[in-house]
Length: 486
Ligand code: BG6
Image (cartoon, rainbow, N blue to C red; front, side, top):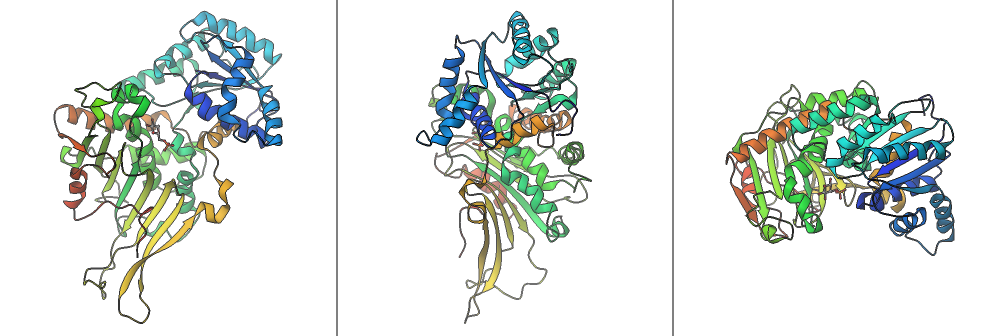
């Protein structure tokens, strides 16, 4: 930990403590970090919400999602230690006066200078009121210890609202204190995109338009909108998945090597990519709903919100000119898979065909983000004793290489980074803006009727229009992390 004040006690204040995110992600991640001895000592966690919980009821509420191995005595012992760090403060997110009481409570709890991490795990409409209240009660002031704020997605609903939110946030916090979460960046395999590219000498020289034909990024989900239908119908796949996760995956794939792995150096390179994304022609976009979407509880019967989208994008720079990046994401698809497939060009002269007389498969590098994390590379091999050539796979899987316990949850990594003051895996304000600019343009085009809303059967890979998008370019979608070749 490099910042002054980091040897001080640390308090993590979670706004929205009775919610799903706290129970499913934040508390389990903090518990894991505590078990591994990676939290600053001492750390206190204060849950803030409106429900009339006591410390005890709050601990019980978050216990079940956290300690899965009840029979394990060591874990139960760790829980006791962890539970003693947890307290609850009842307050309303929209009542500034409650923050005054919280300020006093924290001062008494800490008994002296302390670092504070404010985590906004609330519905987005509370972000601005909370920031204002923190400012009103001077809880943003770095009096001895640091103050940092973590803000969940969605960060605004368009460029204008994200800019307005930034403005409010900056009335209380400097950019270096602000950590906008995109939980995909905390996934090990997403970080491995950078390691793969920049810790190995053999890939970077071919990582450009001279060798790469096109890139496909798929984030497919098997689940439908389920219990989140109300939120989802207001949001849609572009704002839910593309504005953040999908464009971040694209940026990590396409960015130039940063001068260092310092947060700003890294984010400067991502911004350069995001800000030269060409706005797609409407014909290069597909928007779709799965059959039955409008019948879901919480979805308006005449909703036109897409639960699936595919976009063909171009990065207008020297390295990537004319290389299409095809992105697709949706709900109720055939299976859950997140993957980046890099399709290389074919050799300049082909001496061989495969057994059907068809041209050989090009090399494809698949970065498998989830669920079976790893890297696949297809290459062509001669079948022994025959003149037949077949495409085969080189496989690397995290589980095989590092064992089952090797992959921590994204939130563990991200929370630790905030505590250590490392913002490299968090989205900076200019990244968010560049992302919104593209998404706003596509949404505006759709609003003008630029791409018809089409449908697909649940349990498939999406609408035929998305296949046609690639077929027009003589290409097909690939599931490089699931379908084994040969
Ligand atoms: C969230 C979206 O950001 O990411 C969800 O709001 C989506 O709709 C989720 O299901 C996917 O994340 P993961 O980590 O489960 O792949």
